[in-house]
Image (cartoon, rainbow, N blue to C red):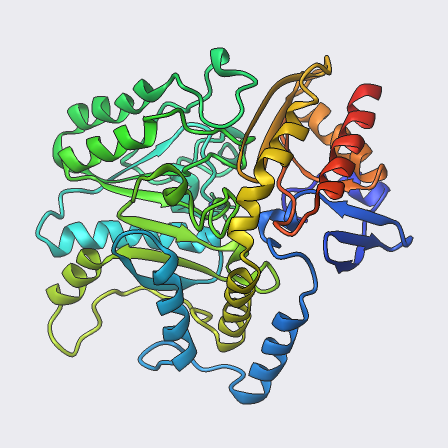
Amino acid sequence: MPFTANRDFKTAPRLQTRSEGVYYWNEHGDKILDGCSGLFNVAAGHNRPEIREAVYHQLGELDYAPHFQLGFPDSFELARQLSEITPGDLNHIFYTCSGSDAVETSLKIALAYHRARGDGHRVRLVGRERAYHGVNFGGLSVSGIGRNKEAFGAGLSGVHHIAHTWLPENRFIKGQPEYGAHLANDLERLAQTCGDTIAACIVEPVAGSTGVLVPPKGYLERLREICDFHGILLIFDEVITGFGRLGTPFGADAFGVTPDLMTMAKAITNGCLPMGAVATKDSIYETITEAADEGLIELFHGYTYSAAPVVVAAALATQEIYRREGLFERAQAMTPIFLDALFSLKDLPIITDIRGYGMLGGVDLAPDGKVGHRGHQTYLRLYEAGLQIKATGDALMIAPPLIVESSHVEMITERLKKVLSAI
Ligand SMILES: Cc1ncc(COP(=O)(O)O)c(C=O)c1O
């Protein structure tokens, strides 16, 4: 089982059998509040009939068609819709099968772009400490969570990491800390050290899986400046932060910084079918396509399930729900209620830090021995108390579906309080 304590699970399996709205039911019939939108992907709530019907209809029309040298009208329509909500001129969409694939794709496009413009010596990639960029070798290499990497070799060569953005003086700050923009200067240090050999710098606008690290004010702006000055492409990995999680379409909008490439996945289909995508600037698409000979393939990359019709149908139905229900705006309106509720836990002695932005919160717990033990035990107790969240190490992550009502937020807080007070 993926990212699971397998032996522990098998002693007491937790089996989910049904979902609806903001709830799951397990095999015993217990009703469990979904405090993490599945895995940050079920933004519009579970079991939406519009998506189910779109998928069913699509299966009867065109179940599958390869996307190599062939097209499918709705995939272009989806690309058009996505490019309308991506900022700036991030207008070209490349489909992938997951967030991990989107990361690999963004890194490969960055390298291919520099090569196409005759700058092929730019081969280095920069990630950040504590980053999560999926599980494939490129993403793992630029990731910065040691436990995820240690069993799997040395990773790609030519990869560097800049400092993470957690500072002890910024504990218990709601939203963006005032202090810490200077941490971006670590990229300047690398640019000086590596000369003009850096192809791209990839960051999550808010580092998610490490426990929600919100960028200090001015930090992303400074990264953008350094990238522009040194000709480095800036990639935002928006796999968690995309589709309204921060109260705006993307993290780029929330922080007013536009990257050159952007990954997305998870909530693109409301989680019910696997899909990812990379949005690139016009100039990146044009440079790569124009560098190849007419009539020949320009980018030797793609997946059997790139833009599979059924998945596209789910994504289109999902985007329609987001627009019709104004879910990104709804997330923005719910943010103060959600963050105030989360920060009301601040005096519980077991909690050492709380962070949050939009409908995404992180709570650090004091460890009780091996890193991750307390996080996992707390996760289990919360599940027993009817609340599903995500634990990484000793941090808990809370990210309810964007359709939650205040009463659900209260329930989440009460269950957290009850369980955390008892530990
Ligand atoms: C920022 C980020 N990038 C990439 C991924 C990997 O996505 P997937 O699990 O769909 O491969 C994740 C997953 O949580 C993520 O948070």
